[in-house]
Length: 234
Image 1: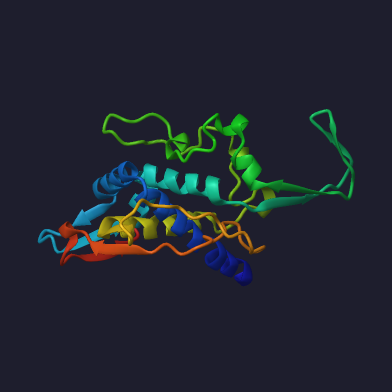
Image 2: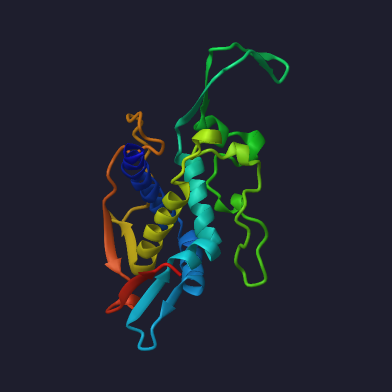
């Protein structure tokens, strides 16, 4: 159990946080909307303005665009495979015969990129696919995927469904939230963002790390100078 948790933290969460930040920071409109959502739904400011507090559970429950963005990152970047042992002969879809003792692999990249499941824009990064209509206050409120849950498997499924999936998403959301709220991050060379391809050389990983480093310039946002940040699990 401890070894599995270590794989999850070191091999997957760090890469998920990296790609979540890359997709948010490289899209100015998405960055603006996520900042607004966080500031209005999950951040409180003290009366003197010197302390801001990120309410973690409010972020999880009410910041649906950020939540959907993490899910869309996992749809694009989770590239592991589910593996099953066939326990008895069976015929799938009336034409695929699986013999007892065979091993079946289900690559996530195939399922997550399926046009049948996700539409013709399956190759596009669009967090809104995990959300329903916009509410009167301008925020997305639905947290459920608009397609079959069987087509979204970054944490596996069935009896091998990852028990730490909720912690992984919450941790990714919290780190991404603090970065976008506290800092302005831009490419160090002043050019456009270039999201690196994954380096697929780790059998233990589900979300592969980037093939190269990304050098950035980090500056505190002007409105946050002198402000102390805190976490609470509200």
